[in-house]
Length: 129
Image: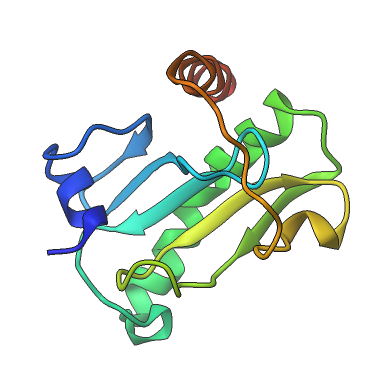
């Protein structure tokens, strides 16, 4: 069972943004920038493109209102999307408010935020959702 499956099951706390029967979205606790959200399918599949065609299409449709909320909540040019998938063997999308391509550089140092920061970010995205 991956850490993402444990988060989905409620065994590990998270800052949830959205959920439906197939997908779960929550704040990345090692964000590139404030507003960095992870979207994961509820089924454990390591490789993103091993997901079924239905899941591949539906994950973008599920992510769209979250991306729009991120764009409204944070000063950014757009909400960038990235599939890296090296950290956790459970396919996932990164939704990140960006102003340049370098804002999606995952080799950069991650932000160190406290619980109150995450709550503020969560509330801001949920308000704009």
